[in-house]
Image 1 (cartoon, rainbow, N blue to C red):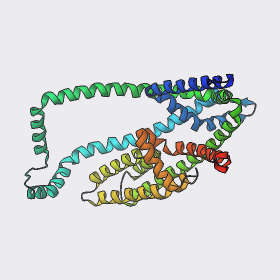
Image 2 (image 1 turned 90 degrees about the horizontal axis):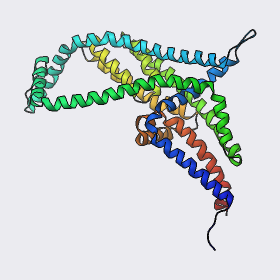
Image 3 (image 1 turned 90 degrees about the vertical axis):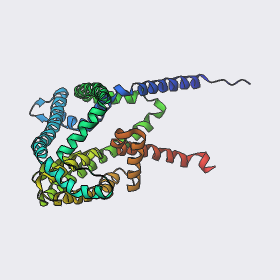
Image 4 (image 1 turned 135 degrees about the vertical axis):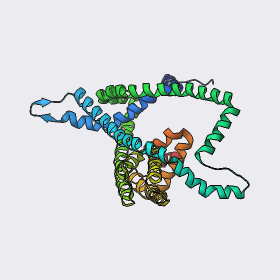
Length: 360
């Protein structure tokens, strides 16, 4: 008897194929989806504040949602601007001082390394004039190749810069419209789910929402604790820029490696400028080494991992796995994505334990 599909099976196959085609189209459009994905993440995080502000009443005055959205977005942009204003004065203060201290720093490095290099048969001085001579010789030897590389990098960098500018302009615009129509969009998504799956889908979405809320609260606690720790530790070590560097390191910890790396670079720069010996560098190494241990083995697994139900080993594995699969963006979204996958796995496990395959 020839194999044939029922009308219901044909409809299911058609709609599954259509959804698969839409998914492939979104994958192909991945490079231009960055502002929309970023705006959607921000909209999810800021929607609670918009709802609370919209429910606020001053006498008989009711705040329209559009105005509430505008106030929340302006507040968010003001917070980002304040963070930039913390960093920029530190950089403006430290960079000229660093430039003035470079000869002394090179002299100290030359005093340490030159005798050891001489023992290996390498006779070179690491002072300013010697480095300028070496750079001049390299430029004269391979000048055409260098200029070709510089021009190619300038073209690529210019395109990337224009892309970043366009993304930075587009994100607030998309964020405004997403927040304005947030509840209507969620209702449309719910109405698009096949009726036979709507109850299970809504239940899973509610579980994911609760887990992500716990994640955000846990991550904010980690940021606050680390900002206090780095500021206090650097102040006790005698750093003049302890407050801005400590706050910056703590607040950017939600971006794995970037916040820590930027704070470490600023602290090392301050140590080289402020201290005439190696005591400042040693203090930075101890403070940031201890901070990384505290964050990686205590704060993140307990305040974030336990709040979303992930074992500390699962947190570490999720960061490594998503970083390997999706790069920097994967590291950034590893824990919230793991929370979503954990909800799906929990429902799959429940279905498996009730199946005839398991119980037969």
